[in-house]
Structure formats: structure tokens, C-alpha cells
Image (cartoon, rainbow, N blue to C red; front, side, top):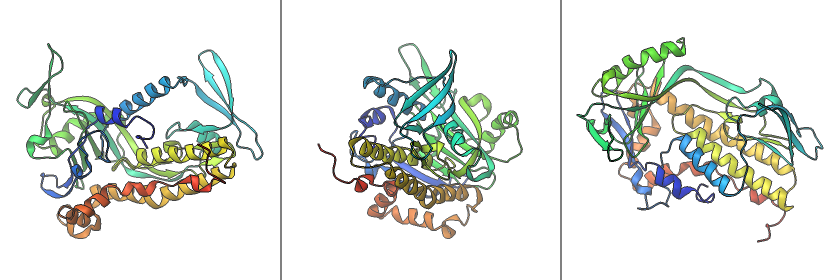
Amino acid sequence: MLRKAGILRQVRERGVLPNKICWRKLDGTRIAGLDRSLLHDGGYEGDALTVLGLGELSEICVEELKKKGQEIRWNEKVVALGGQEEGSTEAWVEVETAEGKKRYEGDFVVGCDGGNSAVRKLLFGKRFDGFTWDVQVVATNVSLLLSSVYTVRVDADVEQTYYDISKFGWEETNFIINNDHWYMAALISNDGLWRISYGEQTGFTDEELLKRQPLKFEQMLPGNPKPSEYKIASISPYKVHQRCAEKMAVGRVALAADAAHLCNPFGGMGLTGGIVDVEGLFECLRGIHAGVADLSILEKYSEVRIEKYQTIVNPVSSSNIVRLSQLDPETALEKDPFLQTVKKAETDFDLSKEMQTASNKLKYDFTQHYTRPIDG
């Protein structure tokens, strides 16, 4: 889908293409893993996993939209909405800006405005079916300041030294199974920045979670680093949810991505599912615009995307967090069918490729509901 949008090469150039992903015990013992390099093509195409920060992906999208002459308006808060009523012939939003209220009208309104979506709340109020996990997650981006690790030249005069987990024999993406200290450590930049997202007990304020971070790192990371041995580039405590809106389209108003559904971050199912939502919604709106589909195709969009969330995104992402936080690492391999399949895939390359492309099951071809092909 990123290839079709014309931004895949930029994503690959800026991102990291990890060769390995694995599951480990807290002491670093490797349980099982997948060879991501099987999907590399040696260039910028292929189906290789690419790791890129969401902020950087957003920058690429913004740049591409501006090239196409699209207008992006920031700092405008949606406060009213129309078009969801049966028989509506247009849609509109009213927004609050620094200059006062404005109203925008169009054929459709699409709410892609995140987990706290104003569009969703205007459609359904506080209703957002699902639950909040009884854990908290702290997401950090981390680099190390000790010159004893490794140094990267940023420019002619500046050098930066990073905390290199790989010196402990780790791979680019690591999931740690442990009831007390479960986390993910993944390389997220070509100059050695790591994303470390870890679980915490509930009941702590954000301030308390930030104060606990140095102790958590010392207890769980390889080498037991002290605060003087790393630099936190960013840190964000948050709660994690599994929720889905009752509908993803009402009249001429549609929802996509986090505005429509939430899941925990382990495995990237939220962003992946969101991108597929947008692709499907594009196909539906394109069909309506071309006169080969009517508004009922949006009902199909809602039905299909909710079904994909309930049968794939929700169960897969839920099993990911349960695997890390609730399994006994000593018996995880013998009790968890997923890890057993991963272990088998270490020597069965066809199985490995099948597992690594399983997210394709999220896709759905909405053009099959067109009344005829689009001319050209």
C-alpha cells in the first residue's frame, strides 16, 4: 500500500530493515526467532519489514500531500459534525480555531483523528466497546553516552555514542517474556537509537512511572545500565486498550485507524490495521466518485473492517501482550503454539515467509463491490 501511494522508497531509505526478530528470557536466552532477511530484495522494494518512527512516516506523508497541492490545516478542533443522518447529501464539520469557529463542507467526512477521536465521540458519545488492560506501558527511545560502547559521527565536528544492545548478542528486535519485567527492545534508526517499551504495574501516576524508569532499566536491560550510561531521548507512559467502534461508517461520515479501533502496541497491529483501513476506504470513496458504487459500499467497509479487527487485530495483538507478560519463560516454548511455529520456521523457510506475510490477511478488495470496472 505504501508502494501504491508512492512513498515506499522514502520509507525504506529513512527506516531500518531488521534482519532478525526473536523472543527471549530476561537473562537473554533466546527462545525462538524469525529471519526477516528472507523478505529482503537487496533494494528498496520487496516485502521486508521496515521500522520507522511514526513521526517520520507522518513527515513523509505530509511532504507528499504538499507536492500534490493538498492543504493541511493544523490546530483546528472539531466541535460539531453533520452528514451522518440518513439521506444526507453532504457532510460538514465545525472547528474551533485561534481566529474563531469555521465550517468545512464536502461530500464526506473521514475521522482519522486518533484514539481520542472527536469525530467518533460526536457519532457515538462515550461508547467505545472493549476494555483497558490492567497494565501500563512506558515507551522510551534510548541512546547511551558512554564512549566505551560505539561512536557515530553525526557531522564533521559532532560525535554521538549509543547504547548498543547488540553487543550482548541481541538482534534488531527482541521481545522479553517475563512476568515482572516484560518488554520490547527494537532498533529504530540507522544511527543506533533503540525503542524500549516495557510493562508496568497499574496504580502509578505518570510522575511515579518516570521516577521508576531508572530502576526498571537497571533491573531488566542487559548490562544493568546506570542512568549515567544512557540518554532518554523520549519517554511516554500510557494505558493500553482493546476497543472498537460499533460502526466505522454512518451516512457520509467514516472512521479509520485509531479513531475506529485501538489495540496494544506489541506487534504493530494498530498502525498496520489503520493503513489497511485507509486503503479500503479509498477504494470505496473512489468507487462512489466514479459512479460505480453507491453509499451502501460504506456499510460494507464498516462491516469488513470491524470483522478484520475482531478476528485478526484484536486476538493477535492480545496474544502478543499476554505472551510477554503472563507466560512462564521457562515453559513458554512448550506451551505456546505460536512460539512452537516460530521455532519450526527457523528451519522451514517457506513457513517463515508465510508467517511474516500473514498481515496480508487484513486486506480486502472492495472493488469487487463495484457495479463495473472504473474506466481507465
